[in-house]
Image 1 (cartoon, one colour):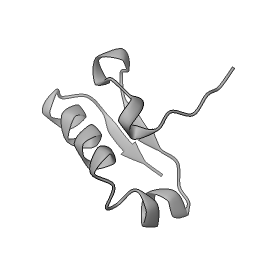
Image 2 (cartoon, helix red, strand yellow; image 1 turned 60 degrees about the vertical axis):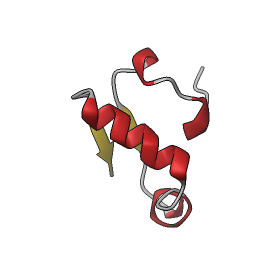
Image 3 (tube, one colour; image 1 turned 45 degrees about the horizontal axis):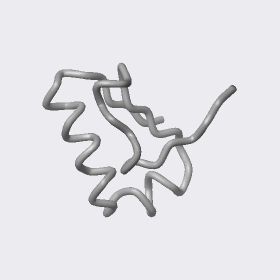
Amino acid sequence: MISTNTPDSVTPVDFDAVFYPGGHGPLWDLVDDRNSIELIESFIAAGQPVSRC
């Protein structure tokens, strides 16, 4: 089963990577979202993969 998590509900140590699929969400909704930015920054700081298509 696939579930969707919001950036503020994700604990980086529980995941191996963060991936945002393409579309308007990453482009318009998440670009200024403080929780999303902090999540991406924490993955980068930990040397974990971050990707968007």
